[in-house]
Structure formats: C-alpha cells, structure tokens
Image 1 (tube, rainbow, N blue to C red):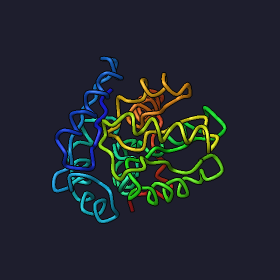
Image 2 (cartoon, helix red, strand yellow):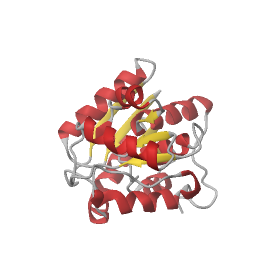
Image 3 (cartoon, rainbow, N blue to C red):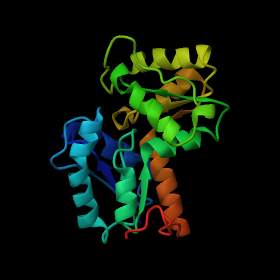
Image 4 (spheres, rainbow, N blue to C red):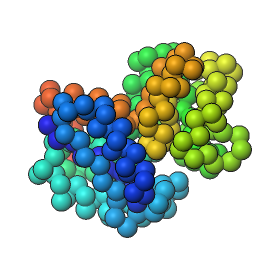
Length: 223
C-alpha cells in the first residue's frame, strides 16, 4: 500500500514535519510519502491561498494517481478536497474531515484548536460544511495572535479552556503543522487529542485495505 500526503502549502519545513510524523505512524506497515504543492503560498490561511494552491494540487494527483493507492490533503480546512475527489478514482481523505468525524466517536463534544483568530471563522465554516455543529464547541485559539506550530503551551492553554468552559471531551489539532503534539498534549489534558494527519492515515489505510473508494455515482462523477 502506498499513500501520498499532499501538503497544500509550499513550506519545505512543514512538509518535512508532516512526513516525519506520518512515517512514524505507518511504522513500515505501508509506504507514505509527503510532497509540498508547487506554486502554492507558504501557508494556507485564506480562501485566496486555497485557490492559488489548487492547480498545483491537481497536478500532483494527475502525476501520481497510478503510483499511489490514496491521497491525503494535509491542511485542516481541507482546501480543494472536493476537486481532488472528483478528478481521481483513488481515495482522497482530508485531515480536517477525518479528525473531526473521528472526534464525534470519542466523546460528547469536541473542540478544534486553531493557530490563530484569523483562521477561526474558516474552521467554523468547515464544521458547518460537515454538519458537525451539534458535536462541536467553539473553535479555540491562543489569545495573543498567531502562534507557531511548535508553541505547545499556548495550544495547551486554549485546549484547557475548551475542556473547562466549553465542555469539550475531545481536542482536535487544527493544523497539519501541529502533528507530533497530540500525545504530549493528551497526557497533560487527560482527554483524547487528535492529530489530523494520523486520523487521515488511519482512515485512508483502512479503506484501501478494505477496497473502499469514493462513490462516482453523482457528486464526484468525473463527467
């Protein structure tokens, strides 16, 4: 089994972090590779960023669909996920959809921890798109602007407020760049903490193994 992770942005550092965490999870049981998106912005934070990333993401799928069994979109807002599902017969899984839907199975309510307030409305819209409003608490973010992917203490503070004030029972990390923080945060918080990359790989590898793929009957039909 071979799974290709598409980082929708053009950051080599974030791509390397995602790849390292993904390979650690796969642990040699299946092949996983990670690529950045050519021509994309260094970070996906706006609708314009997502639009600029679309041509490069489509190019990656076209050039690799014969070589891989599934694709993972490694940005929590799942940019261009529907486009990729439509254009290929291979399975395509978004880390946002995977992590939030898995969260509904693990507790009464989940909260997404965002990197900053700028992306919070977009994440709220994604929650509505997947019809998860009844299962989700408010999106939480560090109070002092935009945090970097490694500022675990800031994310811990936001997660603690979600648990104590919003009745969250599961925490969802709202950026692919936060991969690797899940287990240390989980130990500190005492509730499940979900990394989207891991969740997407759980679902993608399981569905490929079971021979399950995206329906092409109507919504994602190519023509």
